[in-house]
Image (cartoon, rainbow, N blue to C red; front, side):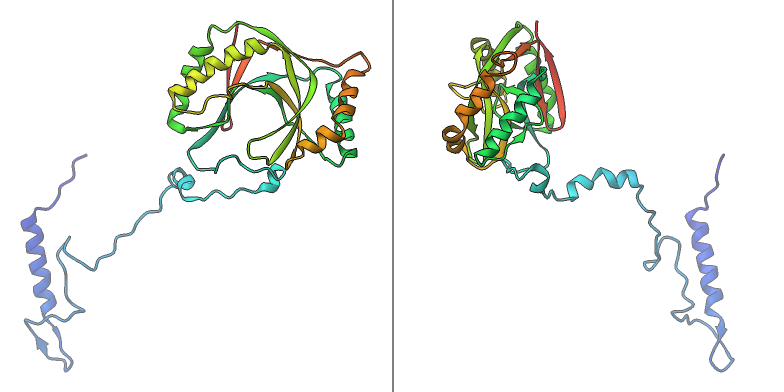
Length: 279
């Protein structure tokens, strides 16, 4: 469809005609006046009315949602995390990241863990069962969002030629984090230490590529079973670690031993999980 628009000359003529008509109007006494325009009768040319109002349409909800994250502030509720403290301050765009070897609990493991928690409770330490079980193969580092894809690609390439192996753990050990804000009851790895070091070596190369912290120089690989807020390392070691170890050694089917078949490594980045099968 074609639409005809009036020319500027036509608009100017219309404006002059309207102005002349408006200049003739009844005065207060009923007499005709010419050549004068009051504020009430003034007509502006199209596009030149400084006092005109333009109605703005509201933005669609989908557009408003695009910027909500940048406007909202993050408030952390420690009650939702069992009183745990972050190792580093949360910032939008920062993604907590670590590499680990997952462990799927075997038969008898949940029952043994409950017995260990009861024993710790008798010593005055209330332990919270771990939400999931794994062996850490890196420190927790911070990735920016635009690093995620290249980081995962580099990690996949570094781990592509890893061979599968088996890890065993049967001795309890107590750890605390660097800030001494949490204590962990764990099982230390006794078999598979050399193979884990090889994996860490590959992971560290990727960390260095992105200027991130590498793993500990002489790591003690372990699988955390339960934790509590605060530094209760000495309390557990002195009061009940021996008794808890006797529960492990005297399990109904003989000494309990955690056995991990290392067929897959994982990386958690924020709320995303990436899997890396190994041969």
